Amino acid sequence: MSTDFDVLVVGAGILGAGTAEALAKEHHSVVILEQLGIAAATSSRSSKLIHGGLRYLESGQFRLVYECLRERSWLLENKPQLVRMVPFYIPVYRHSKRSPWMVRLGLSLYALLSGIGSESSRFRALSKSEWDTLPGLKREDLLAVFRYYDAQTDDAALTRDVVASAIAHGAQIICPGSLVGAEVTDEGVRVDYVADGKLNTLHTRALVNCSGPWVATTNARCSPPVPLPPIDLVAGTHILLPLSLGNKIFYVEAEDHRAVFVMPWQDKTLVGTTERPFFGDPREVVPTVDEEAYLLRTVQQHFFQTRGLKAEDICESFAGLRVLPEAEKSPFARSRESMICCDNERKPRILAVAGGKLTSYRATARKLAKKLQTTLQDKGPPRQNTSSSSNTTSASERERNL
Image (cartoon, rainbow, N blue to C red):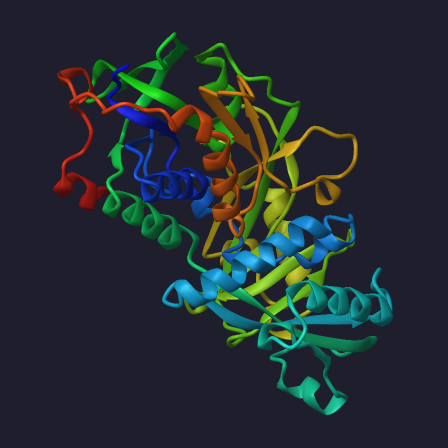
C-alpha cells in the first residue's frame, strides 16, 4: 500500500492543530487542510480562558472539569509565554441565584479536582475591607466576594503556536484549501480538494474531521459519512469596552442568572459570552444588537464606571460558534465534552470530532491518536508526494500563514 500521507486533518482550529501535532510527534506523516486560515473561526473567538470550567460543576461534568484542570497545569508549565494564571473574583449579591455557601462549595470542589495544596487551587472570601480594591464594583446588596485562580491565553496565538509545533515535527499544511470529497477505498482514503483554483487529489490512510462548526458539512462530503450524533450550533458573542479593570477577571451573574466573564484584554475590557441557537453558514455568524445590549447591561449592573456607556461605545464585538449535543435544555447546561465518531471502531479510516473545549485540546487529540493506532500501526513507506498533492505550502508560505 502506498499513500501520500498517513493522516489528513481537516481544519486548523485548536483541535485540528493539536491532532496534527500529536500525530506528527508520533512520527506519522500528516497534512492539514484548512479553508480559511489558522484559528480563523471559533479558535479566535473564545473567552480566551484556559480553565477547568467552574460552572460545569453545576451540571455534573466532573470528569470534564478534572481533565481540563490537568491540561491547564500542563499548559501553564509548558507554554508560560502564552498561558498565565490570573485572579478571578465572584461577587455574590442578595439577589444572586447562587448563595455564598453554594459558591464556597463549588470552589471547594474545584480546588479538590485541581489538586489540594497546589497554588492554583487556593481560594478565599475577601474581607469587606478588601472590597475597596475591586475597581468600581457595586457594593449595594453585596454579600460576599470570592477570589480563586484560573488561566488566560490568546486563543489565536496558542493555535498558531501548536500548528508551528506540528510543522516543526514534520506536518504540512494546505491553506487555503477546501475539501471536495473523500472516499474510503481498500487501501485508505482518496481525497479530492481545491487549492489555488485547481482540483487536486491525495491519498491518505485516515482522515480526521476537525472542522468545528463545519463538522456536519465536511462529514457529508465523506463516503461513507460517520454516524454523527444530533448536534446544534450555538453562537456566543463578546464585546470589547474602552475601559480597564486592572488585571482582575470578574465572574458575574447576568439578569437571566447565566455566568458572564468581565476580563482585561489588550488594555480594554472583554465581556462575554452569550448563547443562542444558530442556523446557516458558519461564515456568516455575527453578533446581534440584542446580544450586545445584554452584555452591556450585565457589565453596567456590576460596575459604576460603565454607567454612561452606550452601544456606540463598544470598540469591537465578535461571535463564535460552539458545537453542542442537540437537547431541549439550555445550552448553558449541555455537555461540553468532545464527541468522537468513526466509520469503523476496529480500524477507522474516517473520524469526526464535534464539540470540546480550548483547554482540553491536547486530551482530545490524544484520544483521536489512540483510535487511529490500529489504522497506522502496519504502515509501509509513504509514497513520494505526487504532483496531485504538491500544493502543500512551502516553508516561506507556512510562515506567512502562521
